[in-house]
Length: 357
Image (cartoon, rainbow, N blue to C red; front, top):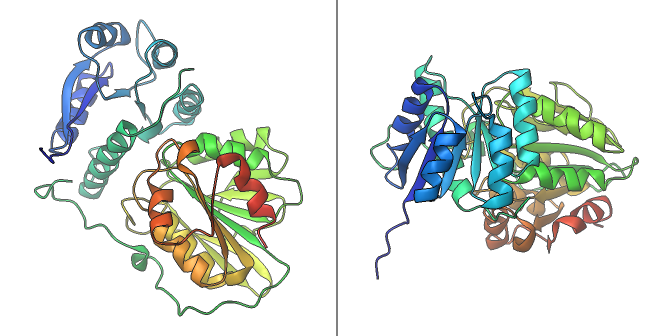
């Protein structure tokens, strides 16, 4: 029996010929991905799907004849296919992309820019990883060796690991959360269940820059607690949640009895910036037994080792269970490492986070 990986077949839908060519060139460098076709608008895409169904669709949201949101609704109600939204880094683009996630898109990433070598290489990594994650997504109706990419870095690239010393337990608890593919909806459920007096929360959700601000504002409107995009030096307060800004690492720090966040530049860690491992490692160091760690749905292993470091430092930890994950990757890796005290369905995670002890 062949043990070769299944080739992921992708349909690219974008009205820009340049973007279609750029996306095709990036994806076709990965031997596990094949661009089966491209389409300049949803009508052409629909005809192609009738003859051959792709594993993943990359979709622009602003197109002539039919916009991407309308097309997405039709796909998700008639024939669900994993859809990856490719959007511009604008405020309006981020709002539309978040709407697409509500309608069933798996993830959103920024349109690649070809302005610097670093950005080009990082775009390759992010796009290929996002397509692979989307291909594994659980839907409901409603790196090859020859690629010249940076090595997969650990949290060591941003913050060195401290000796495993459990900090003395105090009454001030902080909750650290990590999520990726499928995390926007999971975080909504998690944060909507939070009481107004919950411990302070710091979150890493893998998203592009500018999108995290719109996401935080959206959650702030829906939740009883206050939710905002983290800024460097923000205090971590009860009844408040801080979401790491896209393209920046966010670390928990402590000054006396006060927790605050440091937002900083840095290399991709586990193919991501922000990285869950970076947040979790800093939480292990500065909060120790005063922390709760939660790892949610997502592709890959970002956060798994960091959650183990939190557990070793005395924190209480939990992973989202497979049945409620869109992609059971990050939680699965954490469970394999023995990093999770509990494996819980999504609707039980908030209660655990508030009263784990």
